[in-house]
Image (cartoon, rainbow, N blue to C red):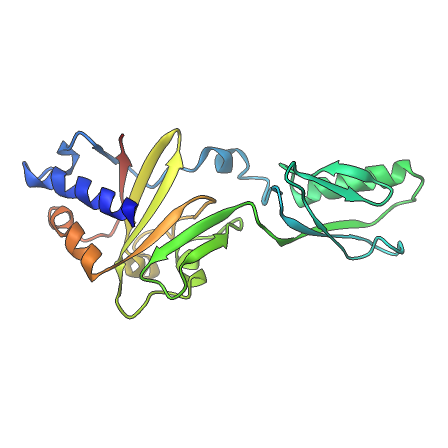
Length: 233
């Protein structure tokens, strides 16, 4: 909630004087959508990357004692598997860990091991949904999650929710950003459903939030594109 109050105060201060949103010293309006977080940009083509405390299911087909084993990654990003020993899984995709285990087993004279590694539960990468939603909380940041899906994970808005006031807070490029979205506009295809990444905070507004944004929105066209700002310290 503190992020929502901060963003609203900045918007209102920008609008109080010359009716130009870029006028406040604490606010810079950005062109386009939210920037992608640095780590997400680097790993965009690799899918999910295993993190500390994630739970994995490792299966070596046809090898007794190695089928459907559930393992938890330790705080240093490591797992231990029979014969293969300790594997540095953190920072690698499940497919990369499969290859590591396969090579270790082959080195121990297991012929053509068929290895699969699947994510059972993530405890390392989450986004947060709060505000006027049915079940506020932290949710696993699966690759490809969008804003509409994130709000759905929180079981949608409450009866008081104004889905025209949904704010996403994000840190990227060493800066803090906020973006205001209208879920109805996204659902109607007026603009793209934006991706949600680990550590994002999604705040679903209510009638109070709408009032706080009122002056800022009054000088903008209908929210058919997201309003993205850089929050300066």
